[in-house]
Length: 374
Image (cartoon, rainbow, N blue to C red):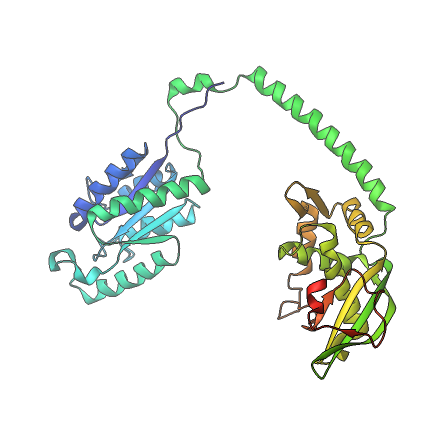
């Protein structure tokens, strides 16, 4: 089935007499993008019946853009210019709007500027209104054409609309039989996905997760700086009962900070649990703590998080799944009743992961480049 060529209709709003050249540049830019320009440049809006017609035109457009110079324009009975009324109406209808305002309106000639102080103030407020949404500055008619083209291309890319197609293009649309076939295939795939998710959910129900406790065992070594020498002051083990939420938080933070490439790289992140629970601020400034996790292995922990569908491993390395990403964002979001985002307990700067600690003995002199061995 051939692709259907779609064209977007764009409503161009501005004051008319002072921006004739600018409007022409914009119209050329739209035609070069295969868009359908729409506007009221051929006659002024001066009655409520015409306003009803303008609203219908805006309703049928895919995008709306307003060009602002240094004139407010003719006003309706409610005291607002038709340009502002068109802008506010497009916003109220949910139509994507793009504003283009002159970078230095005071540089425009007197015959292209407002003389009434009242209208100057209204123009100032309208300019602020336009700049509160997507808006770009322009300096000349020629410059405006390029700004409009770039802005609209980005908007069409990130916010595609319904658009218009030629009547002859309708033959390219799928027939009712083709649509019925696609709907049946879609239902079959949905049923398969639902069965897969049900089986997956049943398996996960029996797996420890969330706040369920898990015992972690760590080895540690404290190295103290004594007279320019590093001395191992203490070696030991510590057991901590943590939970899978805490472990996942350490792992997900490491992934988001792009600090890991292999499984072993997560060990330091997990060791931070032991530092916070067992040492914390007890590590003095002249001491350095080296830790490793001895049980369970880092590989077992990562496989468990995989079984919970929180992390995945591909050719690019470790990453969060959609479920893991949602859990990570939720854990770091502000809760109801809170006025600040949650913060993790701070870790001492002098904490490192070391794969092998048991080879050292208490009191053994370690050279000052110990940090280079882990």
